Structures are given as C-alpha cells and as structure tokens.
Length: 334
Length: 265
Ligand SMILES: Cc1cc2nc3c(=O)[nH]c(=O)nc-3n(C[C@H](O)[C@H](O)[C@H](O)COP(=O)(O)OP(=O)(O)OC[C@H]3O[C@@H](n4cnc5c(N)ncnc54)[C@H](O)[C@@H]3O)c2cc1C
Ligand SMILES: Cc1cc2nc3c(=O)[nH]c(=O)nc-3n(C[C@H](O)[C@H](O)[C@H](O)COP(=O)(O)OP(=O)(O)OC[C@H]3O[C@@H](n4cnc5c(N)ncnc54)[C@H](O)[C@@H]3O)c2cc1C
Image (cartoon, rainbow over the protein chains, first blue to last red):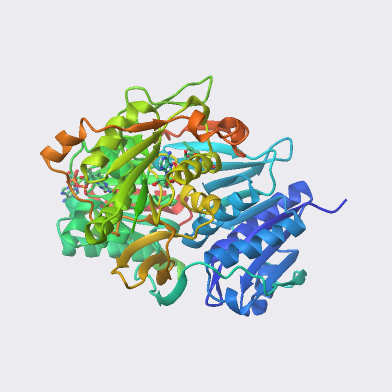
C-alpha cells in the first residue's frame, strides 16, 4: 500500500514564501515520524520552481508544483480549482494551511468543494489512538479550546496559526519535485485583480511576536509610549495597545489587542498602565507569561497576571531598560 | 439592484463571558442567562448593504440561524433599516459545524433567490472560524471575497472591493452575484433612533424550520457535520499572581531574571 500523505499548502505572493508554510512543514515532519507518512508540499504560481530547494530543506519529501500564468497572483477560484484536482488525484490524508488572510479565504472554499471537515486557527495538532488528527481550536477569544477531529472524511483539513509551529531546517535533504500540469480548462472566473499595494508593516506583526509590550491609558501620552517602544526594541518584540491609546493616536488601529482588535499569544506579555477590562483580556489571555505594571494595586489585570508590579511605570521602566541593556551587552562581546 | 441578503449571527454578549460554564457530561457550553447580541462584524455587513440600498435602492433581507429566543437581536438589526428578517430555527440544526451551517444558510438563500449580493461578517466572536462565508459562496456556486476593508459601487460603474492581505491591500473588480465578508475598517455602522427601535418591536420575523428547507438528516446538525468535537476545555489558566516588591532597581533585577528564565534575554 502507498504511504499516506500529509500535505502542506505553501503560500507565496510575488515569489516570496510565507514563513507559516515552512513552520507547517516542521509540524508535518513530526506527525509523519509517528505515522510513517510522507510529507508533501504543494505550491501554485507562475514561476515557483526556484523555491523548491528551500521547501525540501524544511522537511518536504515531495513538492508538487503547479505553474500557470493565471496562477501568478493569488485568486480564489483558480486556486480552489487546482487544489481540488490535486486532492482528487492524490487523496492526501491531511492538508494544512496557514491561518493567513489567504488560507482563511481559500481553505474553507476547498473544504466545501471536497465535502470534508476543516478546523480553524489551530494551535496544536496530534494523532489520536486511531490515527485521526486531533486539531486544537481556540474559541471565545481564546477562553476555550475545542479538540476537533474529522474521522470519516478525507483530507482532514486545518488552518494553523502563524508562529506556533517550529521550523526544522537542514541543508542537503533530498526530495522529489513533481510538476503538475495545469490544463486550459482551469477555472479563471471570479473577481479581477486591479492593483496590489504591498505595504511593509512598520512594526513587527503583533500576532507572531514572541514578546508583546502593551500600553494603556495610564501611559498618558507619546512621551511615555517611547519607553514601551524602547523596551520592545530591546526584547525583539512588538508594541500593542488597549483601545484608549488607539483613540488618542499614540498607537495605530493595527496595534489594538482585544475583542475588537487582535488576539495574541506571545511567550511574554507585559501590560503597562492597563486596567484589565475583559474586552482587552480576551485578546491576551493565551499569553504564556503575563506581567502587569500598574499604579493601582487593585487593577483587575493583576488577577490574570503571573507577575504583578505595583508602581508608576515612569519609575519602574527606566531601571528595567538599564538592567536589560546591561545583560544584553554582557552577551555581545563588542 | 434587487435584493441583498445579510447573514447575522446572534452571539453571547462578551460582557457576560465570565459566566460561561461547561456541562461536564455533554461537554457543551451552558449559555443560559447569557444575553445575545449581534455579532459585531455583522453590523458592518448590514451597514454595507444599507449604504447600497440608500444609494440605488434594494431590498435588504436578514438571515440568521439561531434559537427563536434571539428574535430581539434581529429586531435591533431591523431597526437599523433592513426590510425583513428570516430566522432559521430547528433542533435538527443544532450541533452543525461550519459546512452543515453553510448548507443550511445556502439552502435558505436559494429559497430567497434571486439575489445580487450576500453580506457577511468576516468572523464571529464565539466560534470565530471565519469559514462560513467562503463555504456559503461555494455551495451557491458564486464568487466571494473575504477581509473586505472598503467597497465602492457607483452604478453604472463596476463594484470595486478592497481586500486586506499580508502585507497590504488588493483592489478587486467584481460582478454580481457575489458574497462579501467585511472587517471592522469597512464602515461605521449607523445607530438607530428610539422611534426606529420602537417600530421594530412589533415587526414580524419569519421562522423557517427544516420542514421548509427539506435538508436530509445526513446533511445538517451533528450527523451532517464532517468535524466532531472530541473535547472542550475552558481555559482559565492558573496565573501565579506573584507580587514583586522592593525598590525600582530591585524590581528591575527580579523581572529581568524572570524574562531570562523564558530564554528571551
Ligand atoms: C470553540 C469552537 C470551535 C469551533 N471550531 C470549529 C472548527 O474548527 N470547524 C468547524 O467546522 N466548526 C467549528 N465550530 C462550530 C462553528 O462555530 C459553527 O458551525 C457555527 O455555526 C458557525 O461558525 P462560526 O461561528 O465560526 O462562523 P464564522 O465563519 O466565523 O462566521 C462568519 C460570518 O458568517 C455568518 N454566519 C455564521 N454563522 C451564522 C449563523 N448561524 N447565522 C447567520 N449568519 C452566520 C455571519 O455573517 C458571520 O459574521 C466551533 C465552535 C466552537 C464553539
Ligand atoms: C464593544 C466594546 C469593545 C471594546 N473592545 C476593546 C478591545 O478590543 N481592546 C481594548 O483594549 N479595549 C476595548 N474596549 C474598551 C475597554 O472596555 C476598556 O475601556 C479599555 O480596555 C481600557 O483601556 P485601559 O486599560 O488602557 O484604560 P483604563 O481602564 O483607563 O486603565 C488605565 C490604567 O492605568 C493605570 N495607570 C495610570 N497611571 C499609571 C502610571 N503612571 N503607571 C502605571 N499605571 C498607571 C490606572 O491605574 C488604570 O488601571 C471595548 C469596549 C467596548 C464597549
């Protein structure tokens, strides 16, 4: 019998691979070691063959390459068409997507066409005793985690949060590249792309940052905000915010954490001058270590914090910056 | 423009989420006593529909799959300016995953045909899978666009849609019929006046059961869902609640130690 296959969709825009695809190859490798499956990557585009070495080095045994001029820029219906045909021919057991804007639009459409199950924004994947994939899905702003499985339909499809799986790269891995011929009957219907405005993010994306320094109304203005940016810079993290700083213009809309903003799960969250209203907390409660700095000892954020520091941030942060600089400096010889 | 359908999901009010509990036996969430509100982004979807209605006239129809007890939520949406509402309610629908939910919504939309546009929120507050919009569109065989942050429609010109991507934006030109799902940047939902709210109190809301949709048991509810929930955990992480005391310098050292333990510094 042929080996079962775990597939990873490799997202690319403009010939640049999205990191999440490489992360998923790392996870697929782990799963494949347990089940004895093969790991296959599938990539669509106009000229994407140059990317295959990198994909193989990150863990793919097999790369399916579908090239066609109409696949150069991502469009939902042509992409769904190619992936449907590939799945119907090869019958993968598992098919993983990054939970990016592209993955979140494309994966559900494909799942509905294949009449199979799909789980959303997974934070972990494991096998159960019967060889079904267990898919951990957060809901209610991260307040609950559902374990989803799809026992009777194939492929078992999931989108996975960027930044939660580990890449595993080793140079000189070997893998096969198979070119998939896209016929002239490709479905090219649907909205036309008029323009693509690429805009590099000014700050590190909150959702994938390992460290998030979040500021609230208590920061008081742009001057205090600079301290947060300095701290984030030292720790290689991103700066987030509650709603008031966004309303005041100290922070941008993209930086808001919470019910009407982003959900984050960094390894370290430091909340400064934040009271801890549930609107904000639902967006950060999944963080590994939560530090709260607040002048009010009764601030509700302390109730959901691992480390509580009562005091004025203007007195707490400067010595912390100094201490961290000293430790970082000691590590770098020059 | 003839008809715009807006998919509205009543969701438990997040202000009351701390009262969320789980039935340890059935592993389902106990929602009793938690009031429902309109899923926030569905207001953006409705506002987009109302803007087209204001500009060129159209019938705006609300569609929700939810228990009949959520009627007040639909009345709020009617008060914003929608023309009528259909509530899909049947115990056969309970336990539907996104594919089964989408089958139910798509079948109801076929009963409402012809239509030009379907407006959805980009995701919900509770399940928040963001899977329903693409699946409804697929089942209806019409194109769809997610992550819509702006829309421009000036007949006889084309429909221009701005979609958020990582990183940046894509401008798309689209034709009807079409399904769009909106993000919070798309618009500012209107408020309804006291009189509009009052007038909506007495509006009829049609309730459709599966007797009307005629979907087989293998297509809807738990039996029609390819995914199954194997387990559900309420995640109340136990936090250490450790208080660091001392001079700012002492606190700085203690905190730097904690950060080092994470392997970050
Ligand atoms: C914690 C948790 C995790 C879950 N994980 C999964 C999973 O991984 N896979 C899966 O298939 N199911 C999952 N479900 C079930 C899923 O939430 C339900 O199928 C739900 O009916 C629809 O999904 P949603 O709320 O995520 O909608 P979304 O896809 O997030 O909704 C987007 C938009 O679709 C429209 N819409 C959605 N539902 C309705 C409705 N009932 N009536 C009218 N319009 C609607 C609205 O415009 C809404 O803004 C999960 C549920 C929970 C509670
Ligand atoms: C429908 C809805 C959705 C919302 N969505 C969101 C959302 O997504 N995200 C979000 O964040 N909010 C959201 N909000 C707003 C939310 O309810 C709170 O108002 C907000 O989170 C409070 O922000 P804050 O903690 O920064 O401000 P405050 O509550 O004003 O707290 C400021 C804190 O700073 C402390 N402080 C003051 N000076 C100092 C100092 N010198 N040093 C240290 N500490 C100091 C104070 O003790 C206080 O605890 C939403 C509200 C609604 C109604």
